[in-house]
Length: 457
Ligand code: NAD
Image (tube, rainbow, N blue to C red; front, side, top):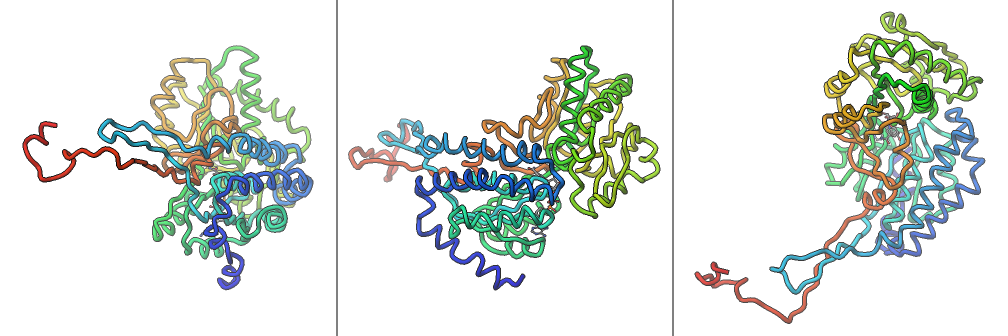
């Protein structure tokens, strides 16, 4: 696409913001309601697009995209009146008499670049924050989920204010052209590699960025004793690994850390749970494209890795499906253990003692999330104090992602900047201190000429 084409597609978005239209509370609420209407009226079209792009089952598509977003819109509509109220601040005696408030102002025109694995949710969830905070926005969905991208490009101009909210479709080339322009914030969801490029481009205009990136998120699984705890753990691991886009999820479990003696028991529990959850191959999402299919296949076909497969390993190139696969102790220097897997392969790394998991995690880049299934309070305390990750969740997987009151985001190479709920509003706002004074009182000690008396004060 020529940049002239891009220019005309973006035409007017900045002047629309400058007109002040997006600042009014009524505009913000009308746009949030328009997103709700779009989700409700076009639910079926979203299911079709997600089926075409990812083979997502409508129930999974509702849970992770439509339903997830409906919940978020409700939360924004319920709370926006409170979020926009200026916050009164305490002031020191030296500034008396003064009042100070933090007033939230919109940043301007923001760019949202999203990835393909939750192509609707990862485009619209940040948009809710941009709208609530009173910004104009441009969304560039991923070209690897073309049906979802086309759905957004067709429907957003119909349901939302098309002068203020635009969708630009395209791949890296369009992404690069967009990054050359000046934005008031760039909100990026994707790989660490492209995240670096986003930050470099943003530096030219001193544009603030929020980078929602990935990495290898481990789950520590302690040798739980009760059969109920073990069963629930197996279900949550299977749900957390294969239940969301068949492992193609940033918050999905990348690998497990387990004591040697517990590993065979856990493998059997996982195998039984996989059989129960996926009696039909239709229930797992497909791999997004041939490149990713090949990448995952290459991880598995490394001979030293292939010999560690204890379950699954079946691939169906024609339908782009890789069945849930479990590996025990693949070499730590194999790509499956050095790169983010982002697919349905689950390595289990065995340890002598579960406490060794702390050193294992600390020796690697800070992950987006650490999961730990344990009833051991001293292990929990050590994990809180001795590890660093975007989030830390005990005894479940993915749950932190759906809580509007909990900030979502990474740390270090898994990204920075937080969103969801009020954190999304904050991500797209500038909290401006507004100080108000009268002319009534004045103290000469503030001003020269300086003398010893003024020093005593
Ligand atoms: P990606 O980085 O390849 O692409 C993300 C977006 O960037 C797409 O819209 C793509 O078109 C665009 N893009 C690609 N090259 C570009 C360039 N040179 N200039 C500008 N834009 C460019 O990532 P992906 O394959 O879509 O997603 C997978 C990655 O995203 C994984 O690492 C995963 O962990 C991460 N992810 C993170 C989160 C999160 O919330 N933290 C959520 C989903 C995915």
